[in-house]
Length: 362
Image (cartoon, rainbow, N blue to C red; front, top):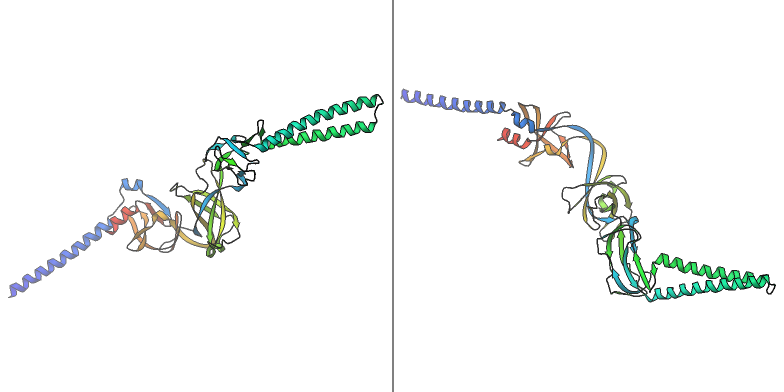
């Protein structure tokens, strides 16, 4: 019986020693972790800094042409469209021929032009005759003055019709030329060959716009209006260019509420040198507002989300890296504001942090 008790005591001692030895080895392995040279070279770090708290609001809208650089072209006469030289989306230069229209109205202008030219010739001859008769004392000076007045009237009428020809781009044979008043892109085209335009046609047939600068129009809900102000920074993205950000500022607030959407519109002017942004593109607009309150922040890349909590890897040296639980207050772009868990000046890992986290927390 005594032998059995002694055997059980030895077994218990070995079991307890084995457990303690296993725990000790596990702790030693954790403490022995160190960044290898290879991993250290590819690891990046960021500082914990205190900065003014920022707020970021997201709205939806669309890209539009700058109204100050958009021209609607209307036909000044009715008639039959004989030729259309451009298509929707084409780039045109100032003065470029867009379409030609054969018109009875132009024929009427042509008759007026010919009549005005004939009147000038007749008036000049009448003045010459009056002057000769006055010199021969066969007429009075008043008749000469009357002839001069008639010549001035006929010349004035001729000049008026000639200016009409220049302004309306009227040509001989009853042809009206539609030309672009500016260089830009054809944004709208509602005219085709052989189309008959009525004399009372009031709709524009072309829209031409310069889009080296465009507008992003965002719809701001009533609840967010108080947080919007002129000059706030805006980031605009589109579905067409995923990952590409266009930067601008709010330069116009339309202080009216749309009764259907219950929203107010704001305008952001954007540079568009490569014409990437096209009118009517859908856009997402993020507007940043800097507050007076300050808070600690880290690069957003440093945040690790695991088990419904947020962590960062605090770097002290290559053999001293700590997994730190943090409370995230708000993420604004590439910065995340932290309400607790860090101190100003500490370093956090922003690349390879997931590998290190898994190594230390398996």
